[in-house]
Image 1 (tube, each protein chain N blue to C red):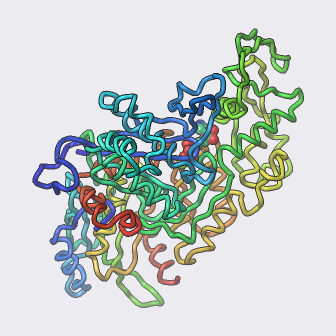
Image 2: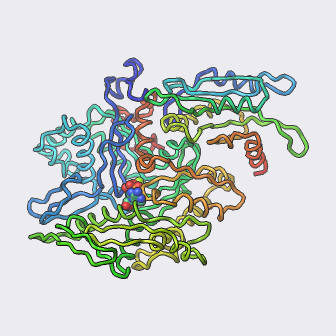
Image 3: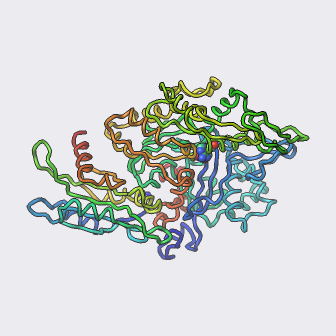
Length: 155
Length: 467
Ligand SMILES: Nc1ncnc2c1ncn2[C@@H]1O[C@H](COP(=O)(O)OP(=O)(O)O)[C@@H](O)[C@H]1O
Ligand SMILES: [Mg+2]
């Protein structure tokens, strides 16, 4: 359980299995975006897609919304896993990364709940390689993510 | 959604009744104690952690800002020590009850004959009928309200046990939780991993949070906070030419406007009794806080304020005028930067008594260095890209720019990103706000330590559950 007490929908690990058994010959999924349900009680799958266009994925995160406690719609945090392909030492490799996306300009209410619920999600995602915390649109640039992944590979 | 009660069926009945009662949130700091209802944006009651103590017979304690006024046989005390850990539990209990019951729910306070009797309940517990009756009177106090309290990350296991004991035994809360302030501040910034810098009243602390957990070895703290800055300002006024008299508002009967730097023309109030130093010091702090808010500024860098040319540059810039309660006024230019410089550079600032001198290791940049040196190097990049700044003293102008410049110089090549809430209320009440959101969540009902759990396990449950 997480510090907020939020739970994880069973669909989360089902889709994650689909992502894990994907490879470039059989691309079942490229990424999954997770959100907290509207009552913030449970983490659910929002999008699961085989589309490999990073910009489409990034747009989805940048456009994500959450409701504040008064019902006003503002920017929203999300979690995502992405099967990230890149070159390392001249070889093509893939690493599944977990992205905790919490835009700085989202409201304190959704930011608090997403941050306090992340552990629950992590526990149902066995086998991702790296975790990246992203808080502004620059952090979600392909080059920023690549740099973060390379830094972790070299660490 | 926060204030909507869960459907009754979803709430375990041993936690709380299932009616529309919201939880209470209490955030005690050395300078201020904040209390309010979970789900609200800001704490409804904010009081100084200082209280009045009447020394004449019978001695008694007075709570609330409006009671801290000039009076005879009267001292001002604090229930915490300078480590922000409760020192006097009897008074803490009374002060918190005053806020949680009288201030938050004035309609349901216990009769005055009972509620000031709570002094010695802990010691007398079970010893005779009178004490038992008092315990019962207080048990009603929070019977319906789950309570979330915050604590410093270095709070002692004993103090944590005291807190749950007080909540469960004395107030009869149906559920209790303790959260560490930097974890709440980190979450409220949207981060499960962060380096939290809390520039508060009696301390500045640096704590690394990883996946929502405090990394114990990282915790660093020093007196480089609000009170230390106050002592710098005192010294600056003392050594200023002409000397600036620190005369707090309550002492001034009336004043006549005077030109800048001219001696004040004010009539001071006379009191037919001695004003205790502790009361005067408390009132001086109010004035010092005003001065910090409107005049003091941190040299933004890059580099130190003392580097060649900086002071000349500042002298050529517009200053800030400040008028003292007695009417004395002057323009502050370079001094208003110099006074905050000692937090960054142990050789700068105004001379203070040896006991108040900060060592190099106690300056803010060195606290951060020590915090990062104490933990796995691999975490460093992640933490520096997620620095969360909180605490009221961080509101001094220029603070974040300077911090950014210091960190950039200390860790070249690493990405530094500072997150400081733009809303000053979020900076002042960051931990309270985080607690308010958590405690208002329907899902949080599974987290609370219930009364039943407490009864089965005793005070030790808090160490097990509130990690
Ligand atoms: N706007 C401000 N600018 C600078 N300092 C401030 C401001 N407001 C309050 N302070 C100082 O902040 C300190 C209290 O900080 P706070 O974070 O409330 O402490 P604590 O949590 O330890 O009680 C006091 O020393 C006060 O003078
Ligand atoms: Mg504090």
